[in-house]
Amino acid sequence: MERNTLNNARIVIFLGITLVTIGIMLLSSNYFNEKADYAYSYMNNLLLEAKNEEIYEMDEEVDNLDESTSSFQEETPEEVKEEPKPYVDPYLNYYIGYIEIPKINLSKGFTKLGSPYNTVNKNVEVVKGSSYPDQEKGNFILAAHSGTSYLAYFKNLYKLSLGDVAYIKYNGKQYTYKIVNIYEQQKTGKIAIYRDTNKTCLTLVTCTKDVKDKQTIYILELDNVANI
Image (cartoon, rainbow, N blue to C red; front, side):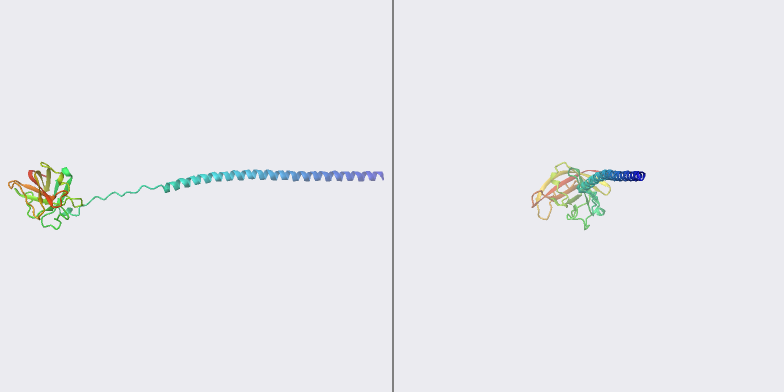
């Protein structure tokens, strides 16, 4: 009887110890699982934070690139300037010669008498009754506008003085003339030319600067002829 009671007590103690051990193990397991979960969550948060920080830094770089690109686009671009096309005189093919006066930077062609382009409203006009430069003792008379329009080819004649030089290029030769007289006349529709008829001459006619009812006449005498 006593033996049975002792055995029963031992069984009860064993079962108790076993249950306590299992309980401790279960509790320990929950603890470690919680710790493991916490550790995992903590590391995961750190990784997420690090990842977000990288993205943020990358966003800053992208933003900066966008800003610099935007800044570049917002800058006023340099205007693309087209090279000006060289001026082509529409009457170039009709010229038979040129008048050049270096002192006033004049170089302009003239057409032949009878040409529809031989008019002061288009060119330097060869005045009717003129003789061409190659005629001995002749008088080659040219007229053109003064003033400020693009047709004012003789606008700077007023700057010329006695002794100044003008050139006529005609028919393969260059004729050099010097100014020997300058005078004014009232505008009457006619030109009175005072020259030495024993000399080969060039006469230039234009409106007098700043005087509406007068014209100025420049008489030039031939000084030299050269081949060109």
